[in-house]
Image 1 (tube, rainbow, N blue to C red):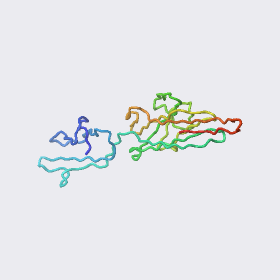
Image 2 (cartoon, rainbow, N blue to C red):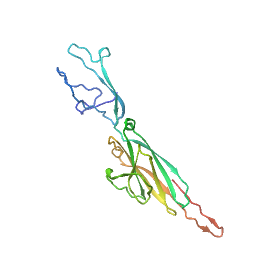
Image 3 (cartoon, one colour):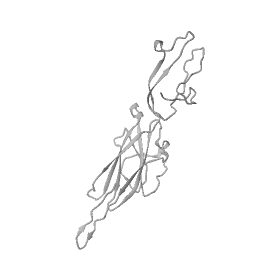
Length: 220
């Protein structure tokens, strides 16, 4: 049994008793919501009796409203990293695919993951969410721009591209939002999810007298 608020939206209880009235009232709204940030599919059980002590719902003694879907949480996201070898121009690219899971996605809603790559220990910019654009091109490690991928879009993958000869030590920052406005930044103290991204590319160099080459090295 899920603990909920009182009929006026306050309190904390397992069962709510609504005010008694001798008149039939139509179109009355009751504000009931879970106390905790629970989400899922619920049903509301109603008990009632008339002046002759006949119960609501006949022999069952109650009536139920089923298929009540409540989404109180931001989308959960898993990041899957794909490491690519250097291309012909000796550029390095890694892909980060965001797998989003949210109740609102199954109810014709959408989920988004907003992300940015920040070099070094620099904090991400505090860009208003309505100014963040969808991801369309590769984001280089020095740009520090927010972008987002959509659960309904063609791609849910962010790309980090490192030019030839460059090293990268930074962080992938990201957060999630759904179409109901649930925002993961409001659910955790650290505000953003983080993933450390490191790439060390050793330049090829000849070591006399051996004549060998030092190979490239990547660490993620």
